[in-house]
Image 1 (cartoon, helix red, strand yellow):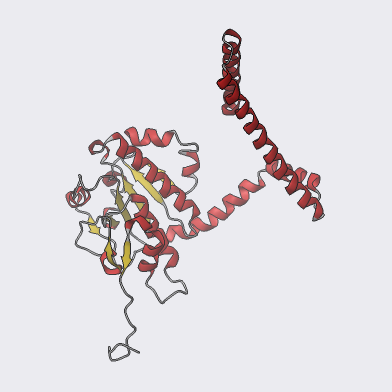
Image 2 (cartoon, rainbow, N blue to C red):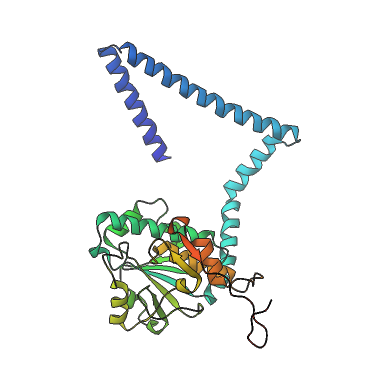
Length: 309
């Protein structure tokens, strides 16, 4: 590939420069020791890598596998694009049910209020969301609005953006949230911890909006103020219902909120009924550093409303 070729040329250039320095100025004893030590380490790594490869080959041959034939078949399948088509078929089957599910949109209109470091963090969170959606057994359509400026530049440095992303349920636009979804404004629900409305169930006809804000302590109520200015419905995740306490703030990153929504969808209607989907989703997603302590489970009640057992 072009990149590997350029890297090789750079390495050759560095070696030539190093050799020229060696000719012009002999290495000291300490430099010679370091160079020999480095050469031994490189050689040892090569030897270990080859030993592992030989062991794998020996194990495969002992199992009666025809490695030459397998290699030829793999090359033929790769040339025909079978692996790529198979992966795309699996993805397409997962996305069929996404049309009947809720969507998620991240509102990236707050960039001008954030530092360059925070913008970089937001771009990383968008990548985490994309990766989670790809891995999910029940992915959803995922949109980033007002995606421009430095945030977009960060993502444009990522290999496969946007081509590979667009093939995996992702869409992005420079236009605002309200402009992009102008015909669906009544279906938008802006998720913010400042809302007074606690969300109980996720509705499949809704588009859940996550504010693309990194420092919410400095930009308090920014998401709620924007939602109210647009006349949008707001809601917050039921953290208070399922968490007794959390050492860190109840405000989560964009990718944590995204992951909780996806996990809820995967768990909803599952055979596991002893715990509500929200609780399971929170337990699965919230990082240990948040210090989340979950509320005690409610005891089952009989027909008269009395605690059973």
